[in-house]
Length: 395
Figure 1: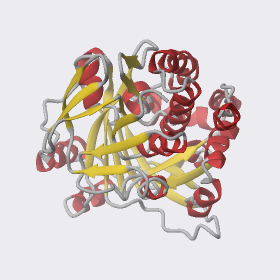
Figure 2: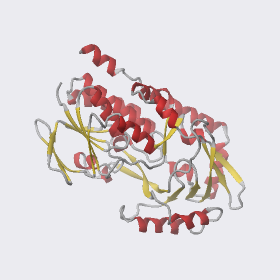
Figure 3: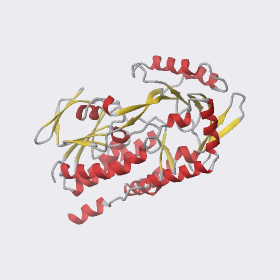
Figure 4: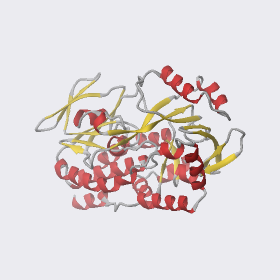
């Protein structure tokens, strides 16, 4: 087989999923992650429909994901007096099965840790393609050569920047920021499949949520791109406090606790636009680095399916990356349309009082049910080849 050595950047979801399948087909895989260790925190993520389930079953993971899944969490929207105005159902926010991101990452990495090389606390700084492979320079480790490099490093992908160009050319700011603070609030017994409740308050361009499976606290606010150091957490906390300081209801109590909460994360809502081309030379992108849409509802499924398709096409092409990458681009260009042009900010934090009222009415309407059905159909709009059986027959 050609192109045996593969470097994957990112050890969250897409990276370990890709490592699993590449190792299955006999590739020599190295995964590099800038975090010092596996990230076991983070909000809940979800899977929808038969396609996502089929990939998890082929990985032997479906039963374990089911065992660790969270319960349903309904988001109850309240006014300042505590009166219920609308309910965003757990079926909408949590798909068919929802699992904490840290639990899913742990499950994925456990399937590859003994067979693939994992390097934590380092990152890629330079990619130089040659006739025979890619020379990779790292922030800390000595330079190494690989046959192929795959970026599974999120919406702010370093691999995409190095191989394709600056982030501004590929990521569109959607006019909102979101913040997660504190451990996810879901604490139910997975065996009992409990349904829990989070509480939310809206003002034009603002959403504050207390509890639920995303985090102890979640905030969303409309804003142009901010000039803020991504590493300056204190400054980011001040931004959130200033944005929400005038809200009533349960928000003042949330802000009073915000300073004490760990796992603070603030980022913009952004959409990656690669124009259907997720590969360049010997480099490929999978997951949010290729087709991310923050809080769009399909990111985790796209990551797992994309990893399955890329690895399968490489194996089916006996390592010929030119042929495999072309097929991967073609397949995922169609399927990744499910990420669409949606903007979670417009739905969760409408910019006008009228918009909030219209959203609340929509949640109880027939049109909302049709939107849910459309999302389910879109998640299954791909015909999965059974690569593992095809490759086994060809050997």
